[in-house]
Structures are given as C-alpha cells and as structure tokens.
Image (cartoon, rainbow, N blue to C red):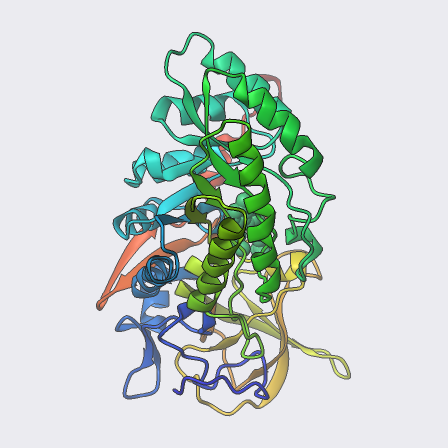
Length: 463
Ligand code: LLP
C-alpha cells in the first residue's frame, strides 16, 4: 500500500493504493484496513468475511479508528489554523446512531441534527445539548419544542420557524440561543440534488431577507442570536467556493453586529468531498480547514470585525471513509453481447446513492482482493427495479455464490438513507476497533416490518 493514488488505475477496483493516513477523507479505504497472511482483508484486525459470516449480510462495518482520526483531523486543523475558538459539529444526517454520537461526543465535537430522531439519538448517545444545533427547512413545532426543552440551539431557517419559536417562547424569561441560516448565493460543482448554496434553494433566508429578519430578531426579547450559518453543498472538491463563503458570512456578521446582535459564531456548513474511487482527488481536511480559516480571518480583519468562533459541519468527510458494506454474491446472469449481471443480497435499499445520484463506488472480493480480474460485471442489487445497480463495469476475479464482496466508502449517506423498499430489512452495523467487533445497530427482521401495519377489523376475515 502506498500513499499516492494511481489516477490511471481502473477507478472502481482497489489495488492497495490510495491510503493516506494523514487525512482519512483522501483515503479510499478505512485506515485500519490490512490483509492477513493469506491476503484476506481485515478491518481493525477483524476478517471481513468472518464478520459477514458472524453478523450476516448485507452488513455495514464502521472502523472506529477512522472515525476518531477524522474527528481529530478537524479538531487539530481548526486549532492550528484558526486563532480564535472553534468547533466542528458532526452533520449526523450522514449516519446517525447512538454509537457514532458517543464516539463523536467523546472526541469533543458537536453535532448537527435535522429531526427529532437525530436529536434524540445525539442526546441519548451522550452529546452535550450545548454542542448540538437543530437544522431544518420545515421544522415541526414538536421538533423545536424538543430542542428548546434540552437547551439545543435552533438554527432559524425561515419566517415560519420564527412564528413557531415566538409561540413556544411565550412567557419564557430567558432568551433562547438561535442561529440564523441564509442562502449565500454561491455556486459549486456537485450534483444538483446536493447543492444548497445557490439562490434557488429551499434552505435558509434569501440574502435580501437578511436585514429584515435581523431587524425583526433585534426586537424579540425571547431570542438571543448566537451566530449565522450558511452551507453551499456536498461532495465538493473545490476550495474556492468555501473561501468565497467566508466573505459572504463576514458581510452578514458585520450587518448583524451593526444591528445590535452580539453574534459570536459563524458556521460555514460542511461539504468537503471524499474519495469514492481512485480517480477522486479531494483536498485533505487540513487543506480545507486551513483555507476556510485563513479566508475567515482575512474577511473579518479587512472588515474590522472581532473574530467569531468558527463552526463547521462536516458529515461525509467525517464518516464516509470509515464505513464499508459487505455483501454476499448470489445469482449470475450473462447476457451475451451486453453484460454479465452478478447480483448481491442488498442494493438500492441499503445504498440508494448510485440510483439517486449516479454515484460511483469501489469494490473488491474480501478474501481475494489481489486476484486478477477475469471479467467486467454489472453488480446488481436484489430489488425489483432494473436501475438497482450498485456498480457498472466492475472488474471481478472469478467469483462464486457466497463470496463476500466489500464496497468501500459507504459510511456516509448509506445507512442513513436506507429504506425498506421491497420490504427488505435494513442491515446491521458493526463497529470494529482493536480486534473487537461490536454490533451497534441490530439487523431488522422481516416480521418486524409488519409491526407498523394495522389490519382493520373488517378485513380480518378476508382469505
Ligand atoms: N450542514 C448542512 C446544513 C447540510 O445541509 C449538510 C448536508 C451538511 C452540513 C453536511 O454536508 P457534508 O459534509 O456531508 O457534505 N444525500 C446526499 C448528501 C446530502 C447532503 C445534505 N446536506 C448524498 O448522499 O450525497
């Protein structure tokens, strides 16, 4: 394994390269991945095919060391490059569980939640409420009330949030901590579904609403505006839009302070990309943080502003590389003149990203990652939909039903976006660390899926 990626290598298979221990988001594989003397892949000392046998497939496996390393990479870089206080908040939409919340809390990060479910998971996982923010472009009164009840900072996204907050805060003597999200009007190159910073977006106040809302808030005794927030998009490899964002946020901060808000925090959102295939070349966490921090210092100094606390909200780059998914190979269908379909026991319900965004991944056989490919296959899922394809043109060595296949970089937006399409139960998640493998999310059983169905009395006699 070497540290420099072979850019001309086949993008969807792993040849042992792309391992850069200094910045896990630039790795294709988790940092604890290695091979046993027989060449079989191990993660944190646990054989991947052993895990598949023990816990079943599909199986999400999380490498705790990679998650801790990315947390430390963000914390360390913020401390090195930003001369005022800072805090990285984990965007838990990327992958939310008690175990992840506990690890991230222990590493000293905060957390961004976007629903009552994510909020409860964070609190129950031990994340201190003062390090949590609640986002959302259509928060319910219940979600806001839950945040207020626990002292979680609400990020105000729109006028409706303010109406709900005003109602919920009636009679309160202490002001509640709020942040304000606005659309920065910055374009970036990523899939249109995950771009949020451009003006035509459902998230946050339009820039021309910023002054009216800041004036309005100045008159709300129940509100204490802690800071401003903007997020430009996700899986971004460019640094420039993040630098531009610092200027846009600093302008807004100047306005807010002019209008009497103390506003100690600026939150630049998340967005740093990761390596899904060897051809991807994202900046390192250190490079990203250095650019954001430097741009923020320059933007504030040139406007004569005291430095705010710098917040950021990485999701994908914090957890994406830590996760792999294990599948078992099943049926095979060669279609002469077209392609050979090799099917696995999961698919779009455990990883909806290929069918949703056309996302690419990298995959190898767990026990023979070095075997020479003998064919190119279409790796299909088991769902009743032709588009349920996880990887196309995947070079694969000879394979048999029951062989375990590993897909890398599935730690972000896989488990959290999983569905029960075709009534397929959600996979388990196992966390591995120092030779230990621990179940952190139980596999659903098909019969459990019936728990939410209600058969009306009058239909009980049918059949
Ligand atoms: N903060 C806010 C306000 C966000 O909306 C997001 C992501 C993040 C932080 C974290 O961004 P990240 O560091 O993960 O790029 N399902 C899509 C990604 C949607 C991202 C939504 N917002 C995917 O699978 O690519």
